Image (cartoon, rainbow, N blue to C red; front, side, top):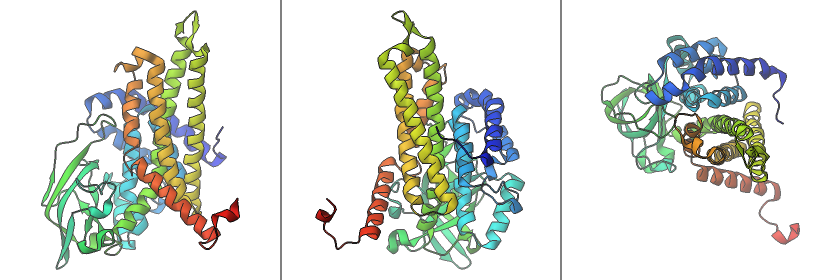
Length: 394
């Protein structure tokens, strides 16, 4: 069984307590109302969860990716939506932490915890999902500013966020090498927000489309250099994917707990169904998949925290494996509970709906498999070179 080192144990106990006492009682209401829970956001700011990666001297927690994953996992056990609130906040903060200059870091990283600024990350477009390089949004330089034109969709925290990390092409002919990143204030003239998307899961944390028409953004809001936007996006997602894996892990753990307790109490054929061989095989597979996913998620986090080679590979692995596990386990859990698993009065069917999106956002699982394969090929080329025949190895 996976175990955390002693340095993480106090945090783990604290997050579990907050999740159980503060988040769990509100989870069903947040799901049903589908309204952004301002009270939860304020409480999470108070606890430090929405500034978890921001250095202490800026007012943040100054924690690492492993801590980020712990909070994501524990929150997801009681509310995947509130886990998403933690994740998307860090996704919107990481570009500034990684590529902001000293002035930008001082300004934004201080304001986020001080003024409780909610962050968002605007990358996806109607015609640019996995193929980021095909984005159509442009940023045209006009004197001391850029004018943004285009549309973003599926913007998590859209409409409620105060700051948006927006990706646009400053040099369209260069494809993905012509993408740049900007910090954009919510209230700028020319930004139009659609109504929130009516999602099957992760409800309570809204997503929407945003249209930009000649939105003026100061040059001081450009992150990094022109043309570094693709790199900024990939470096950000590389660090957040293990947290998606942790979120999926929490969803799976919750579903397994609910269905296992049900199986121990539900009697058929004169005994608890947990004593039936077919049921025991399902439970055993659930437990094994969860332990495997947990080990991979925290291995990826450890590699990122230590700056070790192959972190990109493990990050992609953890995301696609854990989210596939979550989808498999939540579906099997509903099967175990039969008709009871299909009732919206319980919590289980929500876990199945929440699990699905973890296979899609932050890079689809098909794209993650591509990333892993490319990284693997790169490693083998570095190790063996290109001049040797395959027959030498058999």
